[in-house]
Image 1: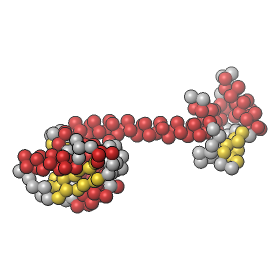
Image 2 (image 1 turned 30 degrees about the horizontal axis):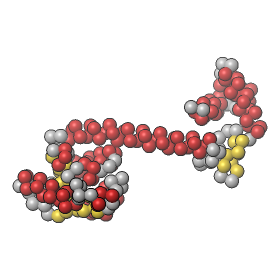
Image 3 (image 1 turned 60 degrees about the vertical axis):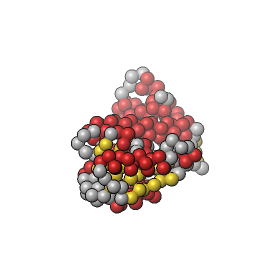
Image 4 (image 1 turned 180 degrees about the vertical axis):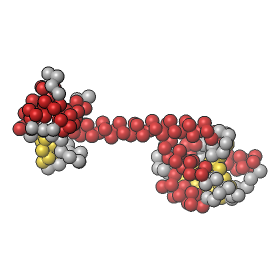
Length: 217
């Protein structure tokens, strides 16, 4: 069994003393001493943002490559290793499967063992899902905003527009057809009847009208 310490500060934190690398190092050494262990090596990230996934950081990548079954990693706080719950969850699951212990001092011990791990994994799973939802929402909002400005986002050009020099330009003829479709739908007409009137199948009509509805919400 080998014991490793992992510590990190961002560029902004380097100017502060409360979370300095020396302070974190002493915390890790004290925890190891409490457990009767000796820290074989420290992996230090100086001036690295927590938003960078662990396996993409210089020291983090080296640490993960060195770990073997039975090894122990000690870090002062969860946010020293992870900023994203999705990154944390994925890495912790891999460590647990590989038989590696990760002691987070602020959480009271091994988050990959049988003690607090279930609680930690449950919380991280919920937070990670929330993070993914927020990312999807931001992407959707950006696309809608760009579309409202007439900027082409890629993919199939929506009905009612033409792509000209990277922008969406209204197609007058298709917009007239679109107005008919919207008007008939407001009157309660079925997709099939609308499609028959404008020469399109009902699935295409439903997709076009659904896009129009979404763009207005």
